[in-house]
Structure formats: C-alpha cells, structure tokens
Length: 88
Image 1 (tube, rainbow, N blue to C red):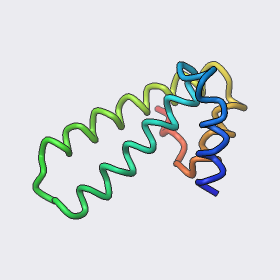
Image 2 (cartoon, rainbow, N blue to C red):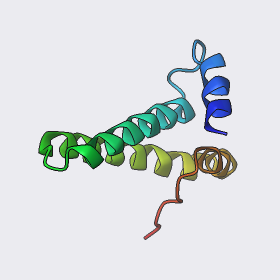
Image 3 (cartoon, rainbow, N blue to C red):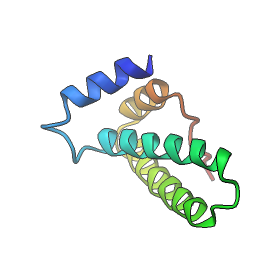
Image 4 (tube, rainbow, N blue to C red):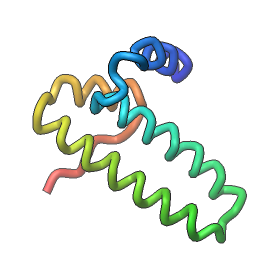
C-alpha cells in the first residue's frame, strides 16, 4: 500500500511539490527514516531533536489542512496510516 502511495505522489511530484499533502507525505517519509535510525542509535540526540522538529512541522500542516478541508485531511491520514490530531 505504501508503494502505491509513493507512486501516486511521485506522479504528481512535478506539479504539486508545494501542496500540503505532498509536504505531509515527505515529512512522514523523513519521520519513518529517522525513527528506524533512532532504533539503532538510541543516544543520537541531534537526530532526536530533528525528529521532534519535523513532527511539529507535520502537526502544524495537518492542523491547517483539517481546518481548511476536512475531507482531504481524512483521506491523507488514511493513506499514510497516521493518527488523527488531538483536538483541544
């Protein structure tokens, strides 16, 4: 399923790099890559800091998308298999 998502996003890559969906997709890939790195290198504190920064950026983008277009937000989190935002 993830490969299908990658292919569909890469097909749209040239025309929509600035879209919120593409940015969330690329942040999710970075998060998964850093998470697997941190499983091996537990004391890599600089990578932990980078992971927290990327998580915050993705969270802000998802909050923006959920306010602007709830349907696109739901589709995106279902495609990427990520949890919904906690609302206050």
